[in-house]
Each structure stands twice: as C-alpha cells, then as structure tokens.
Image 1: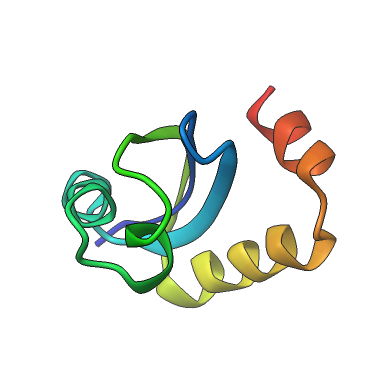
Image 2: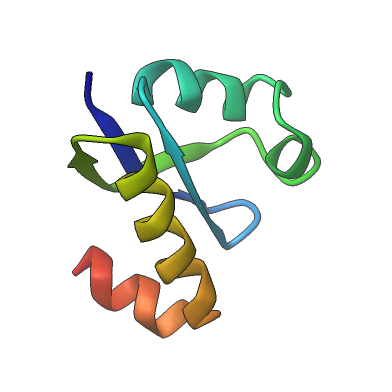
Length: 81
C-alpha cells in the first residue's frame, strides 16, 4: 500500500492545507464536501498542488510533520515549485 503527503490550495481562502492519506481522490472529495473539520469552514474549491508517495504511513506522517514544522508559506510554494 502507498501513502501520500499532499498539499491542497484554495483560491477562495488563499490558503494551503498539508495532510497525508492513502487515497488522494477520496481525501480531496472529503475536503471539498464538508467532511473535514479545518477545510470545511474555509472553502469548497480545494485542489491538489503537490503529492509525494511513501511506502509506509510512518514515513508519510514524518514528511507531513516536517512540512508543517516549517510554518512557512514560502517553503510550501517552493516545494510545489
């Protein structure tokens, strides 16, 4: 099984969201259909801007924490490229 770290962006909210999942399509649908706590209050136009696969959930969670620990929009935009 593959796990992914993903970065979403909403034009309406002008915000990024970083997370991890094993199914990006399902997770994107959840973000856009009020099935998540944080993103449901902001917008419904989330789109995937970045995704990287990992072999284990542990690796994906570690990568997610690394991105979030930077607390930097510039870092996220650099990562997206």
